[in-house]
Image 1 (cartoon, helix red, strand yellow):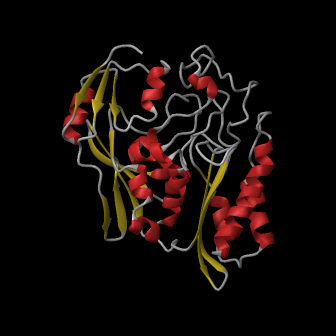
Image 2: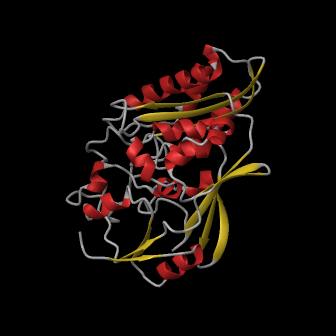
Length: 326
C-alpha cells in the first residue's frame, strides 16, 4: 500500500471543500470495502477525507418518509425497532449482508458505494475494464459463475454486491447528496449505473459529491415481505441470486407489489414488468411462476453462470410464496 494523507472533516461542506482540492482523494467512513481495495492496490488515493465525525448518523421518521443518515451503521438500521416495524424489508436485507462485525462498521453510504467482488477486478494481474478502462474483461470467456445475467455489456459482466441496495431499490428510496455544485436528490433506481462502455463508473454521483442521507417514502409493505438470498454458504457470502419482495395484500389480492433482484446485474435489478403483471391479481402458485418466468425472460448467461437462469426463476417464485404466506 502506498503512503497517503488522511484528514478529518467536521462538516459536510468542509468534507466536500477538502476533497475537491485534490484530483486523487476519496472519502472514508467505515472503510470495510475501501481499505481492502487499497491493500490490494486496486485503488491508491493520495488523500483520504475521514467523514466519521459528520452529523449524518440519525434515523428520523418525518412526515411521509424516513430519513437515514449516510453514516448510520448497517447494524444500527437493521436493529432499529421502528425500521423493523415500518420497513421490515430493509431490516431483512441488511441482516442478510456480511457478518455482524462488518455490519457494526459498515455505513449506509458506504454500502451504496461498495465495489464489485468480481475476482478479475481484485486481481491486478488480470484484465478488467472496471479497474483499468480499455484493458478487457477477463470474466467474459473466463470464470464467471458469480456474474451478471441482466444489463451486462461487452465491456463488463460484473455484479453489484449489496443486499441493502436491493431493498432500497424495491422501496423507491431517494439518495440525497452534497457536492461542489450544491445539494441534489437522485432516485435510488437511477443511482447505480449499468456498465455500458464505462464500467469504471459505478454510480451517477458527480465529481466529489458526498452522500448525506437516503429517504424511504411511507408505504403499506409492513407484513408480507421477504428477502431471499441464495449463496454458497449460510453466512458471510455474497449472493448468487437474491430477491426482495414486498406485497400489499387484501383478501389474497395484490393491491401493490415491489420486486428487485441482487447478484444478477451491475446494479440492483428492479422487476417493474413483473410488478405490473402481479397488481390486481389473486395470489396463487401458478401466478407466481408466471411472474418469475416473465422476470427472467431477457436474462442471458455467460457459461459458468447459466444456472442463474433457472435459479433466478425458482428464487422469485419461492420469495413471493413466502412473502404471501406471512
